[in-house]
Length: 453
Image 1: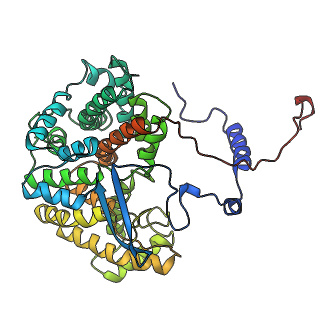
Image 2 (image 1 turned 180 degrees about the vertical axis):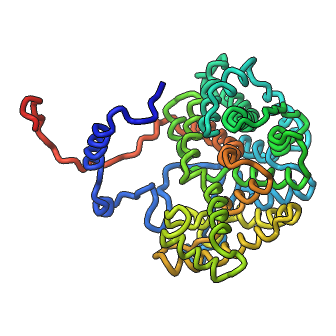
């Protein structure tokens, strides 16, 4: 059994101090050696580390030979995500499965191909015998991302060809993971909720005729009921989170780990571990918590109070005192996040259905005031605007999805992009990714243990 408390706190504290002293690097050296910290320059432009045909994130336009900031655009396999969404919405269809097909194959499916693809995914819903009892129900974690990762790694033991990295076998493994991710996420929460919160345990099997979004709500809710708008908005959230270029942390992790030649389960588990980090996958939870704190501490009907609260956030005087207004700004986008622009109207419709119009109005005020206050308080190199996480947290909250599942649902969507990038890495490069680090340590003589002080 692991010990939650230190056996010898003084010893650990001393070791920690030595480690901090040995590992601290003078920030000026990064400038002296022109090191791109976080693989990005001071303007946020990423270091070119690879090529991809899967998606493109655009935030600038070329005018008179110069790059000029513009509204952000997101493309999947060359198709504007806005057009993709408008296309399936015009037919009153769900779009996530079509998006997965597009990301994996580079083609939009015909009606027949999409039907066959949905049937194929549904055929992979069946989990190994006793998997739910032996893996998911035993020792449930309070963190669903840990449970999801454990489930993925355990599937290795049930695969007859786990280490086979041929393209057809990896495609099969990826499709199976795409199919079972929603089940893993919801069942992990159900187990945690039963054992830790002493709630009733109700588990529904996914239905083959339902979309991924519908099945999430069907499995999660005790009565399995949901409205068409609820499912459609969740489906859109999955589409918008399915992929975001090769440079985001978890997708880059997929490329790095895949380049070592490892198996699919290890590569996807590594991506999950990356997404678990609050700087990557946990922003929407922070947005909801920030608004809860705001409503508990100020009069949200008063615009001046809202502005002052936002100033306190930036000045590290409010909420978690991190100096951040969560949901505002993005590593790439400056003028606008296309996902937020697309999502906003549907979030407003859901708020109307749920009687949450006042909450939506508050979000809109923060989205309008925050960029001005950030510009007033901080030296920034590019503009800031509401990002997709600003709205997705509100959507999940309105859908009654518990905070514990916010990031796992992100993973349910992003497994589509991770799978496409894993296949792309296997097909194209064949070289292990190994970036350079410059050592700044000075040479020292070895001191025999008898002479050390």
